[in-house]
Length: 67
Image 1 (spheres, helix red, strand yellow):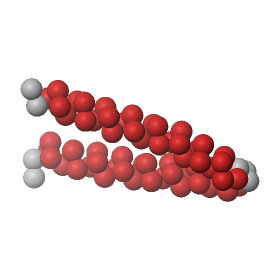
Image 2: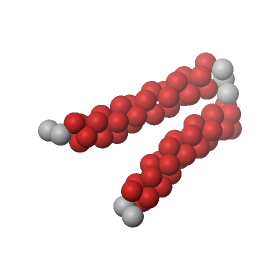
Image 3: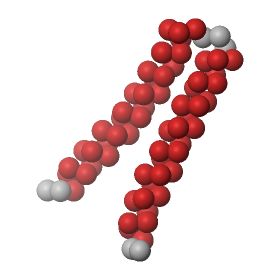
Image 4: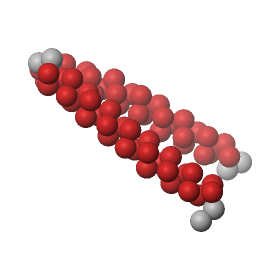
C-alpha cells in the first residue's frame, strides 16, 4: 500500500472518529447540564457548522487539485 493512500484512509477514519467523539461529548454535556431540547439542538448545530466547514474545505481543495 502506498503511503499516500494509507494517509488518506487514516485521515478519513480518524477525523470521522473524532467527529463522533465530539458528538458524544456534546450529547453528554447537554444531558448533564439539563439543556433541554432547544439547548441540545443549538449545541449540535454549532458542532455541525464546524463539521460542515471541514467538509466544505475538503471539497474545495479536492476540486482545486483536479484542475
